[in-house]
Image (tube, rainbow, N blue to C red; front, side, top):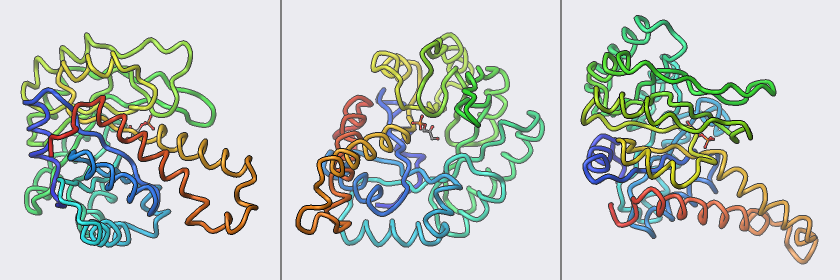
Length: 287
Ligand code: 13P
């Protein structure tokens, strides 16, 4: 069932588990994630970055693919279709295209501007029955070969944004997108704890789920994280499995070049990764 992410994350926060947001890049990704969610009776959030939206020929294409696939595959678990790190204009486009959830990433604006824009989107989302994620404190990651360490959000600013009527909040706690560097300091649980103390029942979002050790994930969930975003890990699993297939020369045996065969190991690798994350996050059986 295509729904917004509000209820599933309220339930997750109350039940002390997290729902995974898995980013999609194409049909294989989408099918692998939807099937794994259904097989594990887990709610799931399909994340679409602006870049991936463009790659998949626009948000309307994505909505059509997801809706059609859910119907044809009989997907009955709750699924949210969510814009990841949206600009203000990107958010408006996804509202129009039929997404059920959006993230407005105003973390690079001065806090007043982040608040003002987030407030406008709260109104728009309410009119459309959509859920809204906001961000405070930018999440680092690799840009042009330089790995930014990831900020720790100011808990007071988190409270200010949480009070605007958003549904869930992404706050930087030293997490970054992509692989973590060897000298990474780990998540700041002190910051997370301070944020949760001030924001109460608000479900908190942990970005950069790839490569965070299991014990840190569990501790973050115990401190109020109810949504965890994973992207790079599925990409790495897909690439590794595909490389193995080609290195073993399987694309040159019989009809091994057929994309339905060539992409199958990567598809299975995404399924295995998503299942493992759902087990770790505790969302299995929670649909
Ligand atoms: P990773 O690519 O590090 O898993 O991060 C995903 C993410 O946070 C998407 O918003």
